[in-house]
Image (tube, rainbow, N blue to C red; front, side):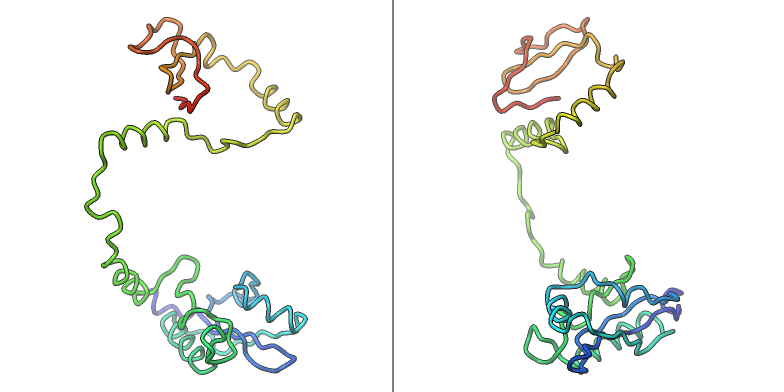
Length: 208
């Protein structure tokens, strides 16, 4: 609750100078430079407006040193006042009626409850049961998962990687074995598991 009493929040608007009209309403957490209000990572409508007015717009701090809940409420009021381009009610490029509802990972109790309400009726996957065959296929598919799967390395990068691995004896002496589906390496002293043979498969392989 103490967070709500923090009066370090503000409401700002962007005004295009060619028409002298607001085109964006936002809220931010106070800093000496009002960083959030200057952020240009906005939606496509915002970027299109800025391009049309040749980047000639100003930032105006409407209210500052207020609580998050006050800023959140005022943002909604200003958006309702000016209206949104996306629904044909006004001049703002805002998409939602209340902005994003979060600042630096902070989510108001109002938005938390809204999220809970939306998720209550989400029944995706509810009651779904995996067959043993699907479980096995999924398990095998994940065993060979690699972040760089399909990535093509340049010859220079390959050379650097080879140099960096010189002297690495962690798997020295290990042998490749396969059962036709899964490739794996075993220690020299280990015996072959059932249904495995020495070598590697290249068709639909899964490496572990």
